[in-house]
Length: 331
Image: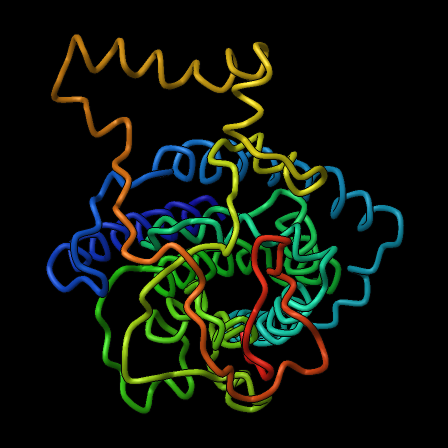
């Protein structure tokens, strides 16, 4: 088991190095700095701190007690299957679930609040996929890994499935100009998923697939134009701080306005900037630690007729400052 975790970790690190290199060589969106705005929040707080904490919560405090209490693993539903068949089974079934839950999140104003952080980045790259609300991760990874444990799968399935998730998550968000041709009808990649993160009205209800693009083509939510987006991110202001992003999902507020009105919040909000400023003033070569914002050429949502219909819903992304102009939709 331990050697499997070492192998999957090595695969992931090698994959990260390959993707970062390709982002520099053949970028989908040119001019994005490696240390873009929000880089350290995504890397430190989302990728390392949140992932470590939620792994303990999900496996030790949710899945393990369920297994001990109900003993579902005694069913051994998949125990006799070859490991590769077990992995394939859980990859496909979970991806099917994720398509529909993801689609539901974009149609539900309540559940959109657990997903909007994932769309808040205005510069989408290999690391952008790590930005996900803690509650969203708890829901999805519990539903993902609980069946693996409860149905008696081989213990190696968990690290293998986790590695596949990480590799694929990096792939679909990476800033690489990929031309996969007909393969994009089956395997999802940045061609369609970078559009999913665009602030364009035609994709408010499109490209929900994670690993397998055929879900979108099968259920009428695929959008694959022959041009690139002009704007990414949300159609409304979103906090840049990790903790503020989670509070924002419960109570709406303007981060900058709150910093002006509240001395306490201003002290907290500016502490990272002050510490980094002192550090980079002494060591100028560490300036990238601040993260570099990228000038946006468009300040409002790009209007368009959204193909495919909006499935009887209004965009969950709507905010008082943003009113979609198109009558039909596909996010």
